Amino acid sequence: MRVNPLVTTLAAICAALIVIDGDTIRFDEERIRLEGIDAAEIGHAKCEAERRLGALAKHRLEQLLGSGAVDIRRNAHPDPPDRYGRTLARVLVDGEDVSCVLIKEGYARPWTGRREDWCTSLDERKPSDATLSCAVTY
Image 1 (cartoon, rainbow, N blue to C red):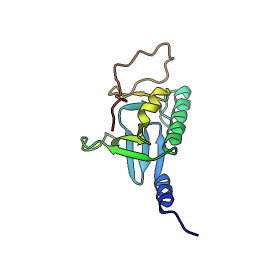
Image 2: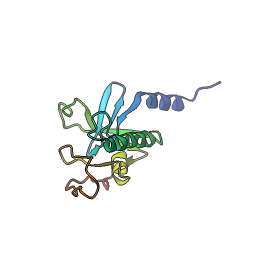
Image 3: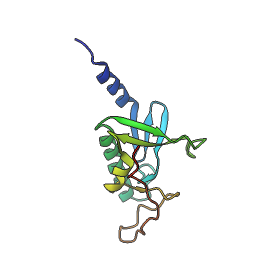
Image 4: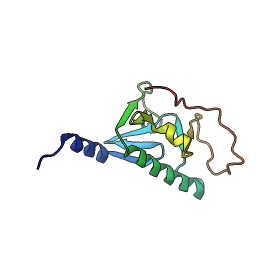
């Protein structure tokens, strides 16, 4: 029986890639924050609706990362990384930015520079001035 090295490599990468929540992953020992988005919290949620949305965002990110070739494009500028020690990066699957997918599907929103309330009703939310350029070709 021959082992396909490509399949073995992909399996090793998938095993090393773990989704923490809707905007954070871990690759080996490196924690990576998806640049430009904010997803609802799971562990530090302010309400049950936020916790549920956070779990859905995490599940969707797991689906996306498992659906094709993953390309992590680390932001070289922040030093140190973000305030929690995470590397900021764009993550692409088969060339598509997963942050853009999560925003388009309602699992995340553009990062405004601060955490915003996920618990207010959709009717009370104010439109965000922040945008994430999803038209950029990498």
